[in-house]
Image (cartoon, rainbow, N blue to C red):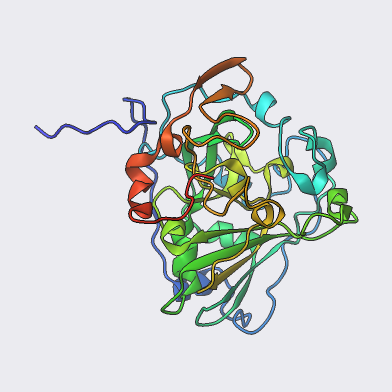
Amino acid sequence: MLIKKTRPWELSENQATSEHIFFNRRKFLKTSGLLAAGVGSGLLAACEDGAEADTGGAISLDPNASKYPAPRNPDFMLSREITREDVSSRYNNFYEFGSHKRISSAAQDLEIRPWQVVIDGDVAEPLTLDCDELIKAMPLEERLYRHRCVEAWAMAVPWTGFPFSELVKLADIKSGVRYVRMETFMNPDVATGQNQFWYPWPYVEGLTLDEATNDLAFLVTGVYGKPLPKQFGAPLRLAVPWKYGFKSIKSIVRFTFTVERPISFWEEINPAEYAFWANVNPEVAHPRWSQATEELLGTGTRVPTQLFNGYAEQVAHLYAGNNQPLYR
């Protein structure tokens, strides 16, 4: 008898498996209507104009709203309760809108349509994609992920999105690529936090190519069975659950594939506190607080923090033999 080994974050119960849609670069460009638009050489048609004003996020005007809720992938379950939506949607780090947690109202001013995503760097041909066409063509699924902030609090989140590896396939990268650099929007008229000149705007993050193509690396387009609200980083953000939350960049506008390791936003500010790797490790304290435990947001309780946030089985091999400061 084959016995399935339960992963650290999983429940024993499984729900319906989501349908996985494989596609290559040319099929994507053709079926989404972008090939005829000359995607390799210029901009694509923009998304529908307009942005909703409700704090709940981009739902009514999202042209992909019918894709939610997406099927839940049973390979990515949790052994803790999902954080209540009314809690997680009102406690957000999004420094573009301020250094406090109550940025949800301010974030509603961000126009997320039109929104374009650039894929460039060491690729066969640079692309500038309409975000809604990109989402429409991707195999959306729901995954339950832990989210561990470097500030020693945590959430359990039902993200919807697609594997980062699908975007890597689409990019058609050249040999020798080792990293992907990600960049968020720049609009200080709306995102007033970007007027704080001492920060190195725009927000930049990076992963190794092996990290980006790991099964856990996820590009998020929705949460709680709906399109992603603005305060969560709409319309497209990253989720890498084995790393501290600041690695999961929000509102992405550019993916650059490169042979050189990018310098991330917080690393540039203070590399002693926020290094590039930022893998969760309870045994390595932040210079100003312990990382041994975490507060579960909305519960008032603290629990022990796990190495790699409980995902060691899936990602520890990525760092074997690496002498870098992986856990800071």
